[in-house]
Picture 1 (cartoon, rainbow, N blue to C red):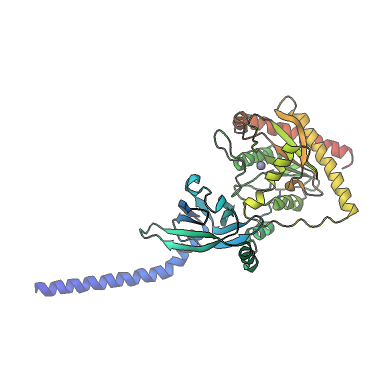
Picture 2: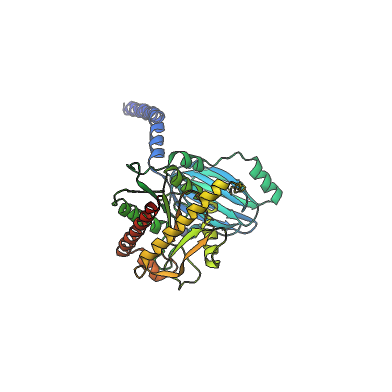
Length: 418
Ligand SMILES: [Zn+2]
């Protein structure tokens, strides 16, 4: 009796367990795709831990994720880089845990756009991933991405680059879809593209004192400037990027041109080796740099695409086009006139470096038909400048002076029938 009862109970138990399992399995089949899809569309993956070990012969990187990451690997030459593309990912581990070592001389990771993130490993020479796989964590804490790099010869690397099929999705997606149009620009409005330097995987410079990231400083300033400019009748300002995402230099130029901008203002706050140098600088484009400081700065700014794992696109050969040449010259004259107007406004109000109007070959200033300046607001390598760059009162004052400069420039252009 006892035994039977127990048997019955056991079988009932078994039946209910079985039923529960079937139900769970069924629910999993029905619900999982929905759950997975909602997770994919909403929450980014969380990369919560990272380690790097090894030497110049072999280097291993391990990154811990809360869920299984889909990933793809690509190789880029000049300089040699390995690009790991991921879905949207929040990188939550300390930067020191994934500091460059062994075969990797530079490691960057961060957001590309709303749907994607990227890790860019710049290598000391030709390298390939002998192993790149995702493993479930034994403790059930998620998944880990394991990357084992080893040295190969130049020819083998060239072969890797050649045989992979890859078109950079992030470039295509952003070029076609993410062109922000200025709101309610009426015909005759003076349209201004305000460009917050750097963003996403490209953090830009890092402040000496409070470790402020340049990409944050430029975005906060760009937003304040856009808001201030839009208070002026007949002016419509817009941002090339509205949040922390990566835009290539050519995308920035393209966005300005496609929105028929009459001005392009790129904002920066870089660092210099000479920590005592402080104050603003206004740059316009030129083939030949005005000085060494300008040349070095332009060279570093032009590295932005490389940092983000973009292929170096060969500049199209200069076409001998008299009309284009004329446009370029006229645009350059307008750019210089804006730069002078800005520096007039800053006089005795905003500190500037010596010879504050300089020029160099900044790729972000190369629109042939949009007058463009690059404004270094100050230097994050100088502690006092860093303080100012984070100060809202200073920002408000500077934004007001820039607006005055833009208005004066516009009045002069209109007086000349522009
Ligand atoms: Zn910069």
